[in-house]
Length: 145
Ligand code: SF4
Ligand SMILES: [Zn+2]
Image 1 (tube, rainbow, N blue to C red):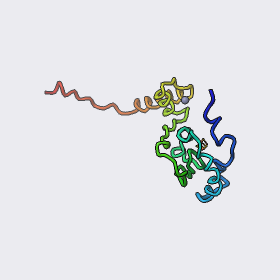
Image 2: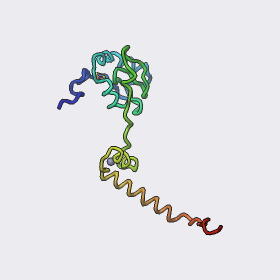
Image 3: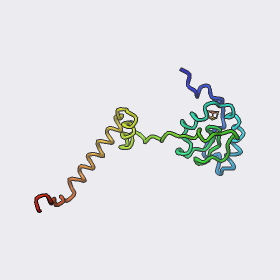
Image 4: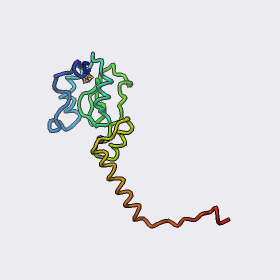
């Protein structure tokens, strides 16, 4: 099956992102990237592009989905962009963390070995902490009336 990234108009083109040491301000990004923006004009994959790059959450700098982004904010866009293209799936937590294990579960996957280990360690640490806590006095109200 052909992946849409193989047939996107920007395939093989440079200048959609720039190295961090090549720019400082939004103006620099405009100079470096804006000339490539019209490439997104006929692209039928703008929504897919944004869903893949997640520019807002990833604080992306460069061109994605017919917009030029600076630190995750749109600084210029093609005239015909549509807000519906902006939906970003939530970034997943990195593997090897308890949050990563939770994300595997939310996606109906079996947590990967490093996430399983992280979850085990967190549970062990929590149990250890609980064992050290002073036992709370339990008062059974039902029997004191
Ligand atoms: S919308 Fe994304 S995939 Fe399409 S041309 Fe622009 S940068 Fe490439
Ligand atoms: Zn994982």
